[in-house]
Length: 198
Image (tube, rainbow, N blue to C red; front, side):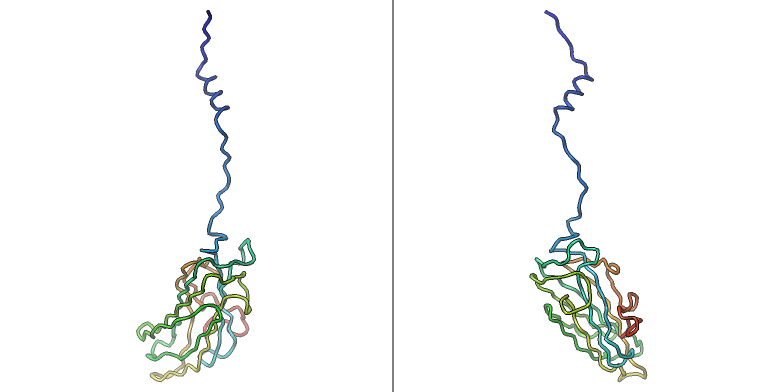
């Protein structure tokens, strides 16, 4: 009886052919189109008026324009924190303003005279349909109406910028990550509020 030995090389080759094949695929980030943490964009859209005088601005929040889907229904609430910052450092009073939204609710914190800030918390409920970033009433947004900025404590006018400081339930990627500062990003309507200061 003749014995044949199988060499290590042949054994390894046979084992490789009999092993199950695993096909590698490129990983797709789960957050890119996730209704619980979508990539977002912000657009400041001023309504006109001289800085420090009666002025309005709409702050629009939508899916980033690079999104692969045209709209998304939020599966969890989204909470956006916004600072309204007074730019007249000598003032200790707050410029009065009103804020309204048709998407969710906004709560207003107390004015901090040392930092010249009022913090808003905007809660957008689950079930809200969020299209790609644009101007218009079909996108989650809020309207700020600033009254005259004449200060009661010093000469000069209080002007304001808007800073989005955080988002839970989403990630702002456009025009940049948080903080998103209107005076750096500037206003969409360059001929009306070109400097992003209101």
